[in-house]
Length: 102
Image (cartoon, rainbow, N blue to C red):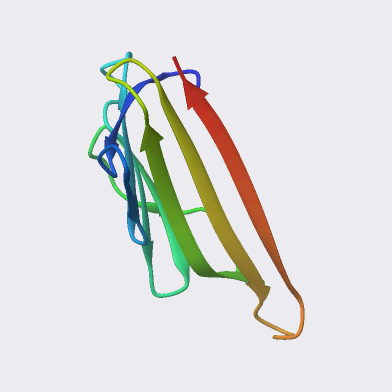
């Protein structure tokens, strides 16, 4: 996320279960969009085609982007992604990323 200039979606002090959008410094990447739909997490760069990030053996079962801000100049973003095996539904994992923007 070193290319991100700011968090566009979700807005400060809100959450999203479907979208995460960054504005990028590099116009070739801007915007950087993640979207969650029907067991798939998709990535799109510069409004291009959306590409799934998970493989055929794994599905995304939950996505949450939580944007917290205490001022106009700093933000904290926590992204939670829950994954599950497509072959054995008993196998699952949750990953939490936490990022700070000055």
